[in-house]
Length: 158
Image 1 (spheres, rainbow, N blue to C red):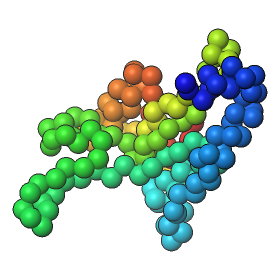
Image 2 (image 1 turned 180 degrees about the horizontal axis):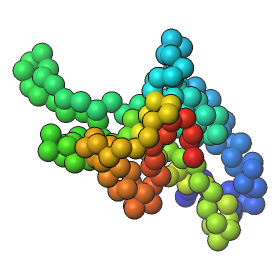
Image 3 (image 1 turned 90 degrees about the vertical axis):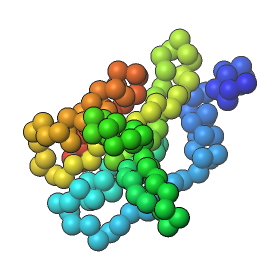
């Protein structure tokens, strides 16, 4: 039985269930680098992660890359980085996480976790359509088309 179904069965109000979830999950403040210049992408990323946490959501750094290990084997890491060819076409966001969404009254206030991806950009950035930006936009479009939430951010967490 899902926790929300149990809460409905026993007439637990949604606010009480939200408080219980917070107690179970606990407080989480992502480690933040305080030496990032205010005009940098890192400062935006720090602010976005903190704002998400304060709202009750979670965002984690999605490091993407590839390289040889000490034993000589080759390793790719990060979401949507299955191969060099895939990575040229679609690039996952800098931050990946879960956004809390309250379902309609038909679901009696049940909260679900929606997949969330944020591509962080420096303050003042504007989309110009470079190959990298196009691949990042393709990722955001894919996530959104499948019911997730994905966007570029220069500081907002939408």
